[in-house]
Length: 278
Image 1 (cartoon, one colour):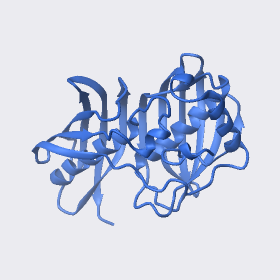
Image 2 (cartoon, one colour):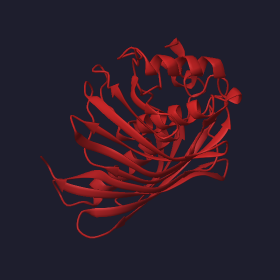
Image 3 (cartoon, one colour):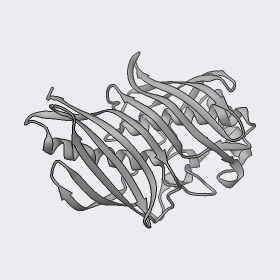
Image 4 (cartoon, rainbow, N blue to C red):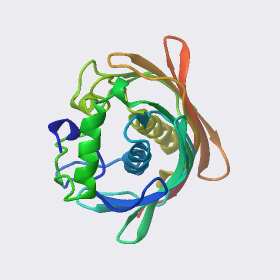
């Protein structure tokens, strides 16, 4: 694949395809990475769904941002492991794609997406249609080289206010330039919503560690009602607010909100469970 698909592309090969209906694929997590966040597992499922929907529409349009009704977390994914991806397209037309999908490792469930919707926008605003079509042919044929992503983006986050175990207000500093914008997207760079969600979940887990009983290890169990309401551009400062509410012993709900220039750009809710240290 072109070098531009070397920083934020999480499908190596499409192994099965029923055009416009369903697909299976895989992604080998590069072994040199220090970690592979669960939100990027969700990103890989979403990217496979995007390939199916884009190909159905002749690469005239592509899904960008949108909403995820429900994300279920089962286990983590480690560098060196192979994600087995599957998506089912519920509907797909010129306006939107609706889909669900799963990721497994060695047959064991890792993550499931349910009730996701991506608005379909003109491809030419974001990328060259002919180039994307060519990359699709590579994915359906020999596949892209594994391990091509050398590092993962780590946007800087500054905590501005904190009430331990209850609330955090922070600022995420979107870089003005970064390699992943070459994938997301060459003609109109957009900060990926999954990177924002990853940082939000990490902040929520920080609060849960403070509120949980000693020795308990919090982990995300379920995220619902994630809505990306507008694009986040390079160089913008994103205000994040996390509010944690206990839901019984070592179980918590976290509200997730993000704003740019006073305008809400993303919302969602996370359910966190804290279990015994393994």
